[in-house]
Image (cartoon, rainbow, N blue to C red):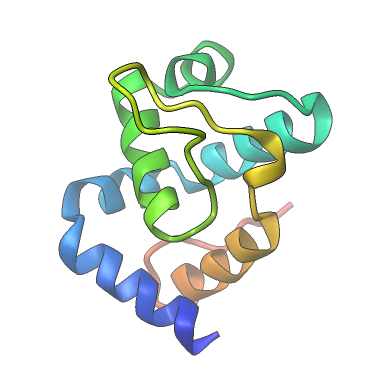
Length: 113
């Protein structure tokens, strides 16, 4: 858990704006990642995310960038086209740990049913 905490702190320090977008849209991103990896089992891009969830394409891209840095998602390939993310490369357990760190540090509020 200390490794995750260190990575979250580093992400906040080095990727200020994408980190802010992630904290503002954390539960949307969590839902989107679960939707594409578990329910649909299909690859996606930031624009496909924006088409299916209430988030803009640039914000989705920034969130995916920071989640890539936090090792939750892994872009299929580096190219000039938009990054594509594969469902088998999404680590939802790590996302849960990141959520715990963000709640403990009061970056996000705990989700209540």
